[in-house]
Length: 157
Image (cartoon, rainbow, N blue to C red; front, side, top):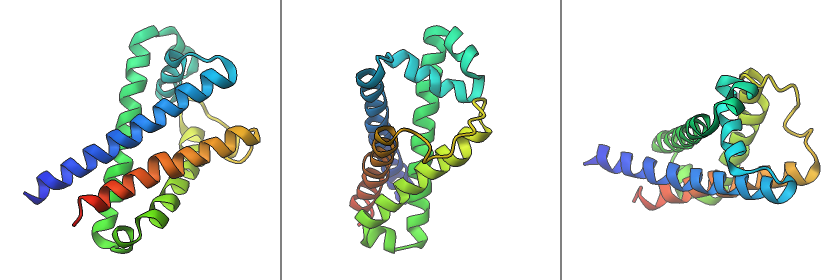
């Protein structure tokens, strides 16, 4: 029963966080510069395939990007859930823990993952235009970290 509850919590938290994040990415990029959702999804796949190969792959690489995106969100939810089993503060103070966790995810994704991915980004997380930086940090803190923390708390009672 405990394994089933853990899996349900991780799945729900990952799906909610992933949905909020990818919706934000598609809407923000379209409003800011006219980038279509398929290109956003291909850019996620581009982390593994490289930007040119991802763009050339059409809908297949967009679907792969969506799968990668939710795999990452589910992994983030699993890490938080498992850490919260040993660090009770994460359950008793989900707002603070979730906001800090979201910030850590942002720094990890933009500071490490993008640098070692097929993008080989040399930009630091804080080198983006202010509007992009603030919006990206906000979605990671509120949409990803906070949602994962609150869902984990709700199902940890």
